Image (cartoon, rainbow, N blue to C red; front, side):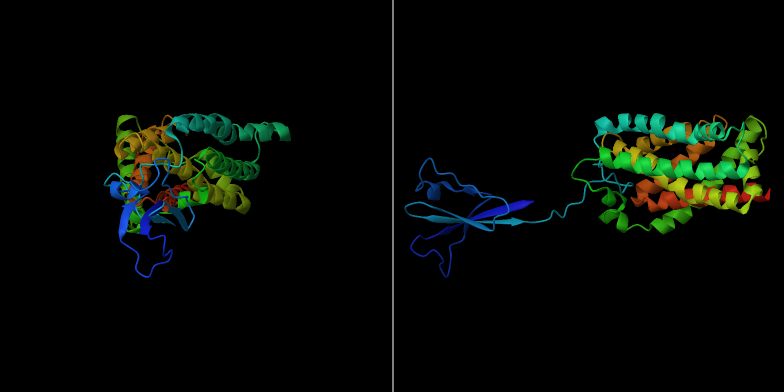
Length: 316
């Protein structure tokens, strides 16, 4: 923000010991003083210049321009600590999301193993190869997604600042919110699983493919831990919460933004039988992000939940 002030100076003493009081602000001068100036005289301050002079036959005006930082935080929505102004234009949000889904997410998350099998001339890759391939695909998807979000952000926003908390969020403990959110998530997932078993029927809690990968070798286990506990939480929370949810706040309330982003998050997994559970997970992660205004909270909750899932699959 640029603030400019005009002060009246006598031409006889360009640097008087006691200058007269401020008579205008922002380049606007009262009529009694401007009456002595030529009608064609323009009073204006040049940005970033410390001082400038403008003199008439009777008076001399000195302009002081100072660059000051705005102390106002972007407005939020009560419960939500997130700013309603996102680093992305709302008009490009859905096109960016569609590009990510069809050009990055679906090909790398669901078609990558087929490509690997074709290159190796094998119908199905062995578990260790699957684990390493999954690690490579998720790493590539994360890097590409970050580059996509960086290239589509508004020019005045630095992408590194996207992960920084604002003033309001710094007053809220993201670590405490993570602990509470994970406990709440555990109870909700247990409840929805119980209700689904009653309505639809019981199903195996284990993913047989994942269990086979975990039991194949130590390299497979390490690759799975890296993917599910580190890379995937950072990737999905950056895209679905940090980008999609935050961008929607400029036009919708935080509750609607959480519900819509959670539905898209659940649908992106292409798992009809787990849609409800994934939707609940997305709602908890979205609420956590809104309240803390810090991506660290949903990333930690997501990581802990995936770690718990891996542990249950491995031990059961």
